[in-house]
Image (tube, rainbow, N blue to C red):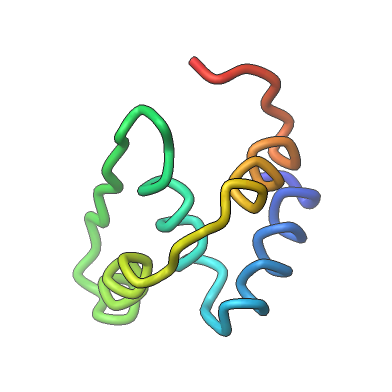
Length: 76
């Protein structure tokens, strides 16, 4: 991810008092195509972050803020 995207994710993570990776998982879960993250890790903290994302309800404006910060222009 770009520095701009990571800064945006970090700001939103502070708001929700979670690790930035939780916001990344939440962002994927909120994606309009119905994407589902695949954790693929055996590290308990990474699995825990994925589970925590289920409790984070991003606002639509936050989702788009991350989308734009990552350099995206179009939804596919």
